[in-house]
Image (cartoon, one colour):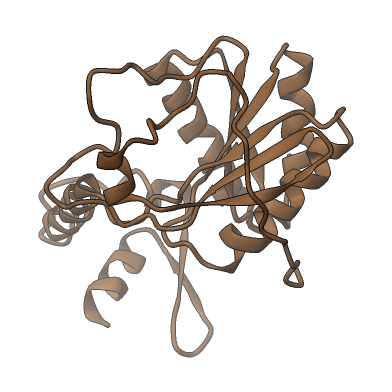
Length: 228
């Protein structure tokens, strides 16, 4: 996908419930810049996902900022030519929906696979959503997050009566990411020692590429990751 230029303009938030309070405490941990409008639609883009390491969550204070009944969440990953990888996003969306209790949650792939962002927007509208919250299943705020996803979201919004949308920060630097990585490392060491079964991520037949272009899966992939 070629980079898409997005102009930056002042943004006026819709009077619906929002995810993150824009007070001084939050602005210290995450800086916001706004995407230009497409008709009545609006895209609020978090430009810096580096939070205060002392705080485990970027929501703070006594106010309860949550997803409303008319809000939809679209979780977007990159998309893969391997169906197993795409199906993993569906599993995560199911987990997310069950844990949060949010009414409308849909998966989307930025490219290479379906459902697309446009498909996901359409499903959200069919379920009664009046605003879409796009949450990138990405680690870092690269070009896809800054340019490609906003352009695709704007296009989807335009075709659906300019439904308002928000694009959140990617996963970025968060204390819980440390716990996740440490858990993966410890489990891998246990598996190599023969104490536990294969990691559930590798059970989906994810493959690891060798320097020669060969592909390994499962336990062999785990050992390869440990040795390079």
